[in-house]
Image (cartoon, rainbow, N blue to C red; front, side):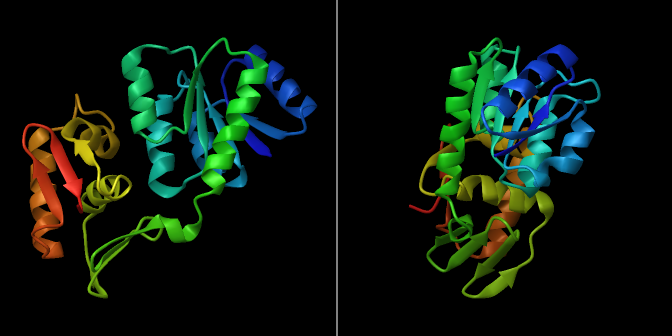
Length: 218
């Protein structure tokens, strides 16, 4: 597969590139987050370091997830629990802490690609009753009528739609939409949810779970 390695350490990058090529992959490499944002669409999978010279790798991941579902495996020395949780909540398909054994890395890459291959374009449209949420096109229709949402309103709805029927905590929503629940203003989430409910006109669609968060659909 075409693999984009986002790694600023030349020694680590060269060893990984050689190993990937030896195992039949076609790797490319960039050292900056900005370059990853420009080139990610040309690859089948990203190996993303978090300690980049121009921006935090988690911010790169968040921006990629707003526009693409390219599989991303975080490969970093940052192994604290908060970083792991944030990486997975922001959309990483897997999270590996350096140093990692080559065999495990290759197996994890294959597993991620197999999982994502099972999700076709049709699966990116979430339907709850007469509400359809197209996650790729960023369009929402209610009873076949398109509803205009702000960017953040759609982001909140998409975060719930990706887990339709499941409870999603306020912290998960703020992590995914604003990038960090510790920096996001809790009141902002309330305002956007109020706007969503008013525009969708379906009172039972978004359920508040007291003391925890929200759920889309039953």
